[in-house]
Image (cartoon, rainbow, N blue to C red; front, side, top):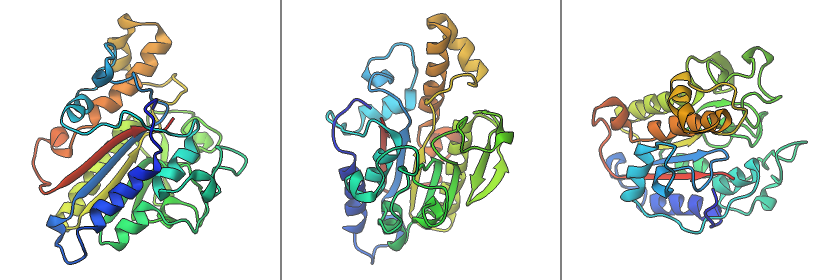
Length: 279
């Protein structure tokens, strides 16, 4: 995102907000945290920032009732931004400096926001793109997340994914807690559906939750997008722009609170939601 403020303070703010409440509080008194981050989505790619092509109604509504950071710095590439976000530290201190040739693997001894929140009694889940290491002890499930539904490496349609996945964003092979499974549907929809199920399970268990939703969309390639959105956007611009916009709109339409997607009010209590883009 072209907003400018170091991403690291966001992780520190989340942890400080939660831990300042103190351990004696019941789960119902602890704020639930939902953190959404997209991949390669620009400042102008939201209705709230003036885009007339892409429809992002839930994010626009969230922007109207939320605080916004008008200066927001991120790294120009994926993994360093994620290392900052997860640790609250400058990425060079985490050994994560790039996206390839082993430079996107975060130092296992780093303490993540997920580890801090899990120690405070939170259920922790990631749904989407981790990109800080695919092998023990650098995986999301080694770094504080109870549940991880992710793709490997830096994205789908990249060398890290299983060859059988066929460079697809629809019906891709994903990984649940380290084990591959065949997903059904567009990847962004899968991440949000899995996150909603995790939230419902956490609510039933009366545990506060931390949901990290880092989608790999709208990062390219753009050959596999929801056809319904592609056709709706095709009259508004060239094919490439329409394909990219469809990916962004898919995320913008799904990014509402769980009850906006399910129509119920199963999760009450204090909420903390944040949305950002990585590059």
